[in-house]
Image (cartoon, rainbow, N blue to C red; front, side):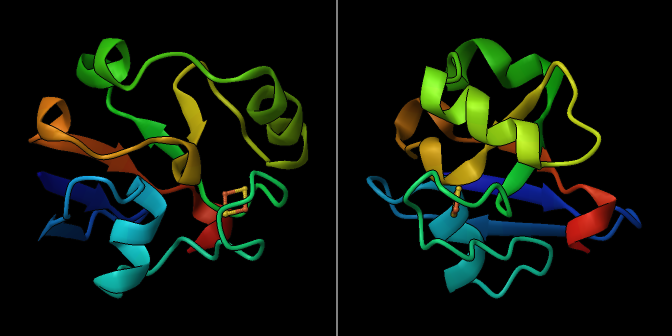
Length: 105
Ligand code: FES
């Protein structure tokens, strides 16, 4: 699926992410800056925080309760905040747009 990551300064990275990977892994493999993913995708660090474009929140689904509590450690959490290691890429997310928070930039 094609995913667009937008850095806090507006720089866009449109990359092809293999289905089955997470949105976090897609960023790391394509060297998109702004996602640290310190815990490697275990939902235990909150440094893979992204804002899902409002047009896509239906498709990316709901936060899990574990994700929700981990987001307490992220700053500037908004309604559309997600941990990108908890979003699995698949055909339904082709065209997805996520924005990266300032503190991870
Ligand atoms: Fe650590 Fe997502 S990579 S919570």
